[in-house]
Length: 428
Ligand SMILES: [Ca+2]
Ligand SMILES: [Ca+2]
Image (cartoon, rainbow, N blue to C red; front, top):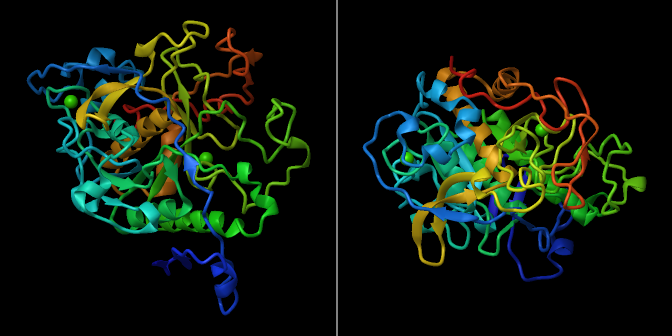
């Protein structure tokens, strides 16, 4: 049992099917079972593994052995930023994900071990093995983008001077349950993290939550946990998702899901039924672009939902549909969960764009240490490079049906929010 009295949430494990009826009333506002409410990571998997030969550390990201493959980093002006700062070790970014490999040569020095934990089942387990990866290296890849060391080995992260903490919320089957997310947000808030990265997407649409009073308290608990963390000084960064859908569903228009997959006509969205954490107030939601700085074919979007964009990779755009351009994905740290070996490899997704924004936020906070979450969120947007809407219907992969999307808005628009994060603008 976990008691989050801070937000009035109690998580209990039971095999009693009548548990909810047994405890309802007597001061209990609402009771919900989270069984079946897990959400899977939307993750492309490792596309290719790359070997790195060690070179002498230089303190300059462009000297890293694999720098030449990191197209994403010049795109966000990283070399110019690192000439000013690589970040402060006082800044800790919580990686709410599938764990971080603590033996990885590019990460071992970068992890705040005393702030790392597993939150699986909503229960804290701070043993190192508990917050290392088991069946997915998604979190290891994310952590490398944020903070891989400048050490003459492998790649450089966006903010190698800061620390990352592993907060494991993805279980061995690849699911994120609400109780793990609640645990993760509260852990981050109470262990001095100023930023969290959330490269996952809880989408209660699928569960028709608006019609189901038994599920609503689950999402309320997650929202309370997010709000609590913000009040404790945490900026939460979230991926927009990889479904190429318009998340602006509160204002239904003809551009909203038109593929028949959602019942648009009778949807009434209430505050208790939003896509989490991307749509929670105060969360910085990140869409993805590829090497051409245009929306990645898979990236979800939405005016008023997406605040900024960042590189997430796009392996289909330049080939008009064929997934052949691996080097157009994002290169970062990996961990082979079968052979238990560390390495470097490509992945793509908004899971990869979010951590670029989290890294830039960490640099911003290093340069401006007292910035509060709301100010930091608006600073990230104010310093971003505006990207214009493509005209007409955007169709990056004409050989594949289903990737059309229409951008709306001006300098601030539904594809890119305020624009692409700029690491130099936040530290100069
Ligand atoms: Ca490195
Ligand atoms: Ca948002």
